[in-house]
Image 1 (cartoon, rainbow, N blue to C red):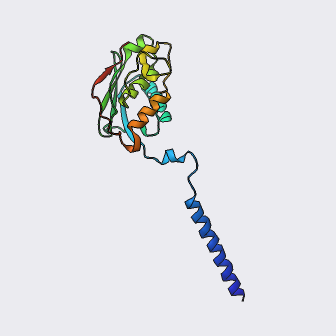
Image 2 (image 1 turned 120 degrees about the vertical axis):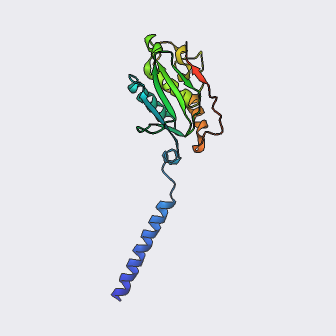
Length: 192
């Protein structure tokens, strides 16, 4: 009789464990985890030829990574081909208009001429990365638009894409792809 009670108790415990495990697996994911579960497109950048711009590039990359989910920018390991090649120049900032795709390549030139005229380095870096992600200039425009670039004036330090800019980039990289958008393949010179 004791053995029978023990078997019944063990069976009940196993059934409870199975039910709890099944319920936990069937429960919906907590809010906010759906974004993390979606596969983001990873684009590598190489800033090895952008001496003097490292902190501005890091801040610009961080701004994009915080504000979009469908694409993430990561520094390319040494010797690895990068989709976004960033170089420092003495001219005016410019970039090739994307959206760049994994395996593709665009060039970003961070020109010291704009810095000499008083423009913010982090805003410049974030703006030029925005071109690589497919955003054209929106000149003239207010400081709240990252892609307004130099038309916002030298006092503007905003390096954060606004909601419209974020949504546009998200649409280019939706579902892990670049949504059939063809890159223009032209340089965008950000002269004032």
